[in-house]
Amino acid sequence: MKTIFPRFLLFFVPISCALAALVLLLYRQDLAKERIRHESDGSYNVDLHAEIIAAEFRAVKSDLLFLSGQSVLQDYLARPSAAAKRALAREYLMFGSGKGIYGRIRYLDAAGREVVRIDGDEGHPVIAPDNQLGSATDRYYFREALALKKGQTYVSPFDLDSERGDIKRPFKPRLRFAVPVFDASGSKRGVVVLDYMGAKMLRKLDEISAHLPGSLALLNGNGFWLRAPRREDEWAFMFARDRRFGGGYPRGWREIVRGGRGAARTDEGLFAFTTFSPVDAGFMTGGQAESLLRIVYVLPQEALDLKSRKLLKTLLIPCAFIEAVLAVLIWFLCRAHALRENSRRRLLESEARLRILSTGLIEAQERERKSLSRDLHDDLGQLLTAACLELERALLPEGKAVRPELVRGVLEYTRSALDRMREISSRLRPRVLDDLGLKEAARSLIDEHRKKTGIDFRAELRFESREVPSAVSENIYRILQEALNNVVKHARAKKGLITLSLADSRIELTVKDWGVGLDQRSLNPGTMGLLSMRERSELLGGTFSLRSEPGAGTEVRVVVPMPASSAAGDV
Image 1 (tube, rainbow, N blue to C red):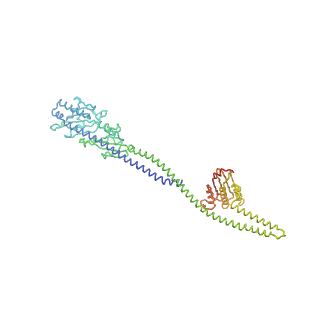
Image 2 (cartoon, rainbow, N blue to C red):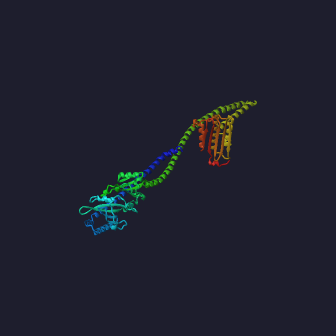
Image 3 (cartoon, helix red, strand yellow):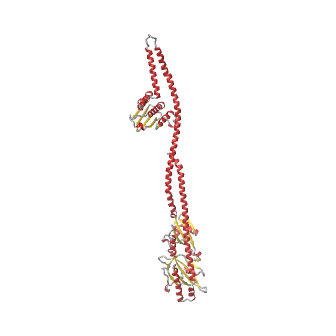
């Protein structure tokens, strides 16, 4: 795990980062495209509405100039009479019926009195009776229009229709267009006033913005709402309430005032805007800033990025799946690589141990051969030579008595030679292992070491009635023999415990002493005894472990599986 996880991170993190960067790049590209599209759509729609307003203003100006120059009006101005007035009223009525966009059509004399008035708010224009005609002397639009020169036209700010200071309900948005009237001699005789019904223009604004994800607003020059998403924000200036666009979108309003026309993005959202000035359409406004009309498209920040966020969520699902698959695949590959490297390392270590063991075995074989040669030559050779000499002496001439002491000497030499032969044979392979099996061979070996060394070796031999294969019993016996020799040579212990058990299809050997112990960090793993025990254990497919601490003794543990064919066989 220690080697797998860093390697996993080494491969997974860059790939994961690259995949995340790709998703982020796609998201950012889509976000930029969406913002450009929204900006383009917003700019197109505000420009479209501004063009509609400009077209309406041009049409009204044309109507004003037409009405102010009519021959019927000039006839009335030249010869005022009831008949001429009725003719003028009928002409205005026909005009209003044909247009359908004017709430009132009026001709005011130079004093501001209504001479003719057509009322058309209900959709059916009618001529106002003389007893209902009023005066507009105190109205600002009359004064502004009367001051104009010939050919000049005036438009008022957008507001609500009122009667004697009271705003009519339901609200009736109005724009008042006016032009001065001159007679044939060039004298200024009055003003023609058209009350444009702004509700139709506002409905066009709603129709244009119906399909848009944002909202299209109409503001006056001071930033008051004329058309707003919330109806309670509209016409606030008519009721002395300060509800302006800048109150809800302060940063957006600053961009609108600064730019006049264009698009801007703030943390409040996207703003596309344009400004329509009646002056550009040829109207006089009397210098009133509120006569400006600002068309603004507003797309809040959450709506601006909505589609891109949906795309991001759509991309994240397969991205998460791909990363999960990559994580599993990379982990599997890293684990396989780690296992392969671990196997390779263990193989190299095993080869190194095998080379050391092979060298040691060759040297041990040579030493054993020298020892056997010396024992056979020195001990057995001398004994047999002495026995031969005694036998020669025992061959007496005929007729002489046999000497008993010579015969007894020959017997003693022969017995010594036999004992020495048994000892050498036991060194090569104990007969008890073949005759009585591993359990009794182990018991005999432990008893032999207890007698020779005086160390209190306690044995716990727990065997089921199973036959142990020859290869297993021989290697277990040699491991036990080497472990006991190490206790005798190095442990300086007074007691030890040997546990040998056969159960659950495996055989376990534990040799523990309570001697001086050793420091495993300073232990040479290439020691022949340890190598021999480890190699014998691994040769059988088992495990070898050594635990020791200075002053706490040493424990050798070997676990070897039993072959399947032998594990099931009962004795």
